Length: 553
Image 1 (cartoon, rainbow, N blue to C red):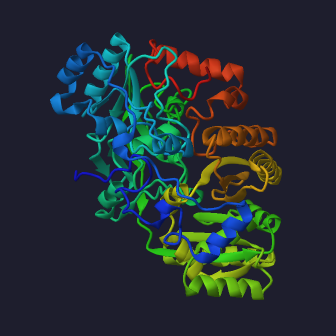
Image 2 (image 1 turned 180 degrees about the vertical axis):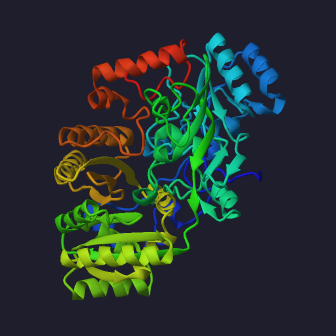
Image 3 (image 1 turned 135 degrees about the horizontal axis):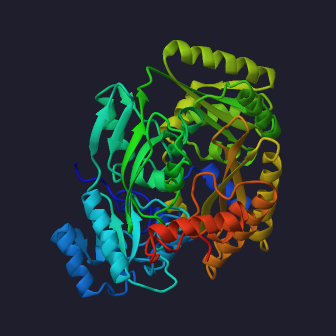
């Protein structure tokens, strides 16, 4: 396959951005004037230059991989597939959370692996894991590098040498079974490449998380990812029919489509295991016909409570669209101010004229056969109108669709201007969701308000279910330049305790990683943790497989 673009070492984009006014703390090239004024007023924030250090100045310790290990790994996978050079290690030095980026922006690459190894087959991967178990080398699988919960930190209580196992060589289509709607692929394939391969057969996969441009299919499986269309097509774990998992103890072939009743679902154990049991080397996925029709549109509610009630009704009558995104008043207001152009100004004017300038914006999207899309859209519209919603048009929906992957790029510029920018997410039943929403906002507000500085907390529902929905929260605040990492750790701890106490889940789709592992026992109970430890002990007896994530210390 053609070489794929990589994320930047200290940010998101595939290439290092050109120097801009943002490096001087001036965000005029990234945000409209109204949005800059709004953020300054709401946050008590004064834009200031906080650029990252030069990549050449990032501190990187020498590789600790023993020469014996390097030679034996090279014998397994080939000379060019064991790399200890500076750039290879830096590019795999953690993920893309706010804390990950802060550290690298400040010149800290302490999470970098001692080497990068690129196996090309299941057999090579299994042999690699067996060898690393023998030699005491920690193994961290690496796909697209988009983890936002510390999933790639390589933390090891015994401080052993570590390698990043990059799956880029295993990124092709293995087989396509069109009658059965199944495709088998390597774990290093990315979403755009999968869609290109399926498009030639009139098919699609339709899993579109915000990290879609860079994240890999193996990463989706390892973290039980959810995409922006998951309300309609299902979460990633629902779309996996079969998996090959290489472990230090051997190779597991999991799943038997279309269905089986032969005991507990071991495929379900491997999904979401975050590299702690082994490395995913092959996936068979359920695909579907490419939609012949798309309809995206916007609606407005007077209040968050009214919007939630309407979504609950849609869910109850099985009328949820494929894409659902209900923004609370703070996110609605910020998004409208950050959108430039005459269309955005016209929408703000229309909402104000109809008394909805403090309301909530709902984006809905339907995909499929034209007649089916029209019927679903008509039924949903009838119910929404009964619940007091007003339609604000297709341009709003299409605008969201065309900018659906833009937020991480904007985050880079906001970080340059001295802001804290981070997200967290959860899910709860329809009954508990309002309480979880209030509890998280209160915890974040209390922990991040200092003197004249206060946070902007924006929330949206982005995945609907018959029994509840997810809640996604974006936080902006004036960064504490003296203790920026501690500032967010304190807020994150408060928010996580609050959401769990109110009935939310620890994570809906970001996974556990290192960031959430202290709360894992609270999520699944002490016995549940013991069960996972027992499985890990059998498959990974020396504990070399990503030991710093998922399971509490």
